[in-house]
Amino acid sequence: MRSTGWARSLAGVLAKSGISPNAISAASIGAALFGSGSIIAAGNCVHPWPAAWIVGAVFIQLRLICNLMDGMVAIEGGKKSPTGELWNEIPDRIADPILLVSAGWAAGLPWVGALAGWAAIMTAYVRSIGATLTGEQDFCGPFAKQQRMACLTIAVLLTAAESLWQGDKQILQLAVILIAVGTCITLVRRILRLAKKLRKTGP
Image 1: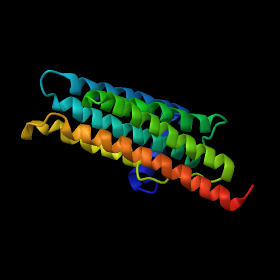
Image 2 (image 1 turned 90 degrees about the horizontal axis):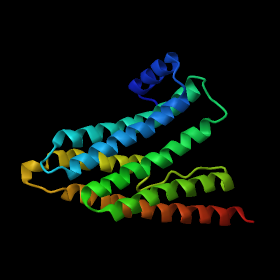
Image 3 (image 1 turned 45 degrees about the horizontal axis):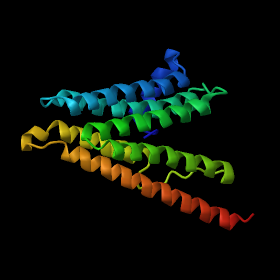
Image 4 (image 1 turned 90 degrees about the vertical axis):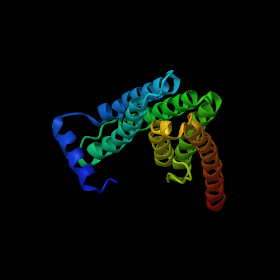
């Protein structure tokens, strides 16, 4: 996605605007908060509120765009900072659980959303440990960040249209369960892959 024309153009505009990569990283948390608020509002209203679901989906994608732009502006715009790595990682660890827990709450499955949020943090933690121990980061799936957010976005958009078939958040429930299970599988897979790599390199 970094090589697409729109991404390069947007990164160029942001780099020239004077906005720092760290500010873009922080904005991803704001996008996650707005998205989660919309999802919770839509999931707990008495009457169907399709617009709120759609707004939630838009902010999920805005969060991902922020995640993409901070790195591009930092590297390609020549705006790296000493704290850039912190700002690149920590907002993600906040935004992921905010959105996943909110989706679980809106779907009526709060503990499943909490499990998904915990697993999302742990997959990143194992990736970070792997980078420290081996010098390489493992972004394997099946439910890495992009896959989690894609699944959630599609589910939220479909939930906005569920009045067409008289649904009651079944799609969102299925998506939250799928993300929780898939992210746990991803966590186990990353641990096993890291252990295998460490055994090959020896003590």
